[in-house]
Image 1 (cartoon, one colour):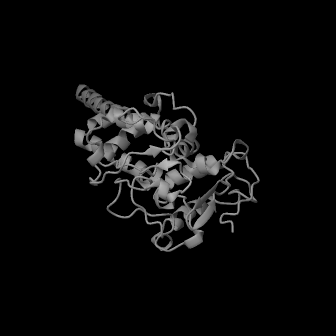
Image 2: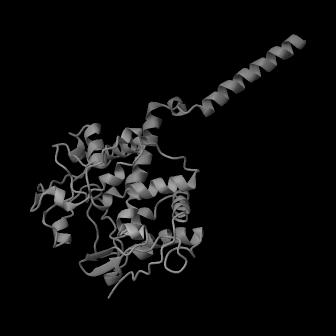
Image 3: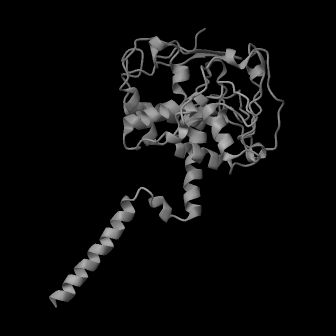
Amino acid sequence: MLKRISIAIISVLVVLTVLLNACNNDSGISALSKEDSLKLKVDRGSYLVHSVTHCTMCHSQLDFTKFSFPVIPGTEGGGGIALHEFDSTFPGKLYFPNITPYKLKDWTDGEIARAITHGINKDGDTLLPIMPYHDFSRMAKEDVESVIAYLRTMDTVDTSYPKRQLFIPVAMFGGGPLPDNDYTTNTRPDSTDKIKNGQYLISIAGCEGCHSPDTTKHFAGGFEEKSPGFTVRSGNLTPDSATGIGAWTEEMFIAKFRSNSSPENVNREAGKYNTIMPWTFFGTMTDNDLKSIYAYLRTMPPVKNKVVKWPE
């Protein structure tokens, strides 16, 4: 009788050990089918493209009459925005390219990754730093792969545009030297570590480019963008209580994103009170990611810098 009980106990312990190992195994995703594993990658890539890195903000047609320039449905990834028409001071002619399978079908994954993280296209040309490859070079290897997996699944948009014509050398557009880091060594922080997750999200979302006009005002805002019909300045994101977000609660921070990306706000003609802040993208981020960004911003030194958002 005791022998049978001992055997039963040992059997239960063996089963529990197998189950625990399966749960704790970092490669547990391998237990999923190949199709399920790919779906997870594509879903992550879709989230990044449409909510964090906002790729389709540049690579789609936008409705410039509405608040925060929402994407015109059906044009996602098809490119076509003419930078030289949007900015009359641009020294050349440039159309944002098509990034749907219509154009990327002849690109290898490695070529797409090189363009995203190092600013070199399939033909070996250096991309203008308007493409934020310096930010994307910090992206985790698994996230770069997820973005590529999603781009492969996008609806094909059959559009082509003339090649760029630059009146000055690429080096004169700024942006510094090309990234020299190897993105394949980058890792994504645990999403439960809000400060590290927030720092990671901010770095790949390009927040610093608009909210840090110079090294003395890190994330203190004031960057001015003059667009047809309006002029807007970026806000102070430091925890200064008078001029930044120091008096904001976490709930207030998230509510700002949800409100400014709501149909009521987006589907209106904002006129001179418009913005280039991609609310329609960032407003679809998860609560956890927005909380992470808020937590990271709270760790920054407060900088007193009053910003008039829409100067006359």
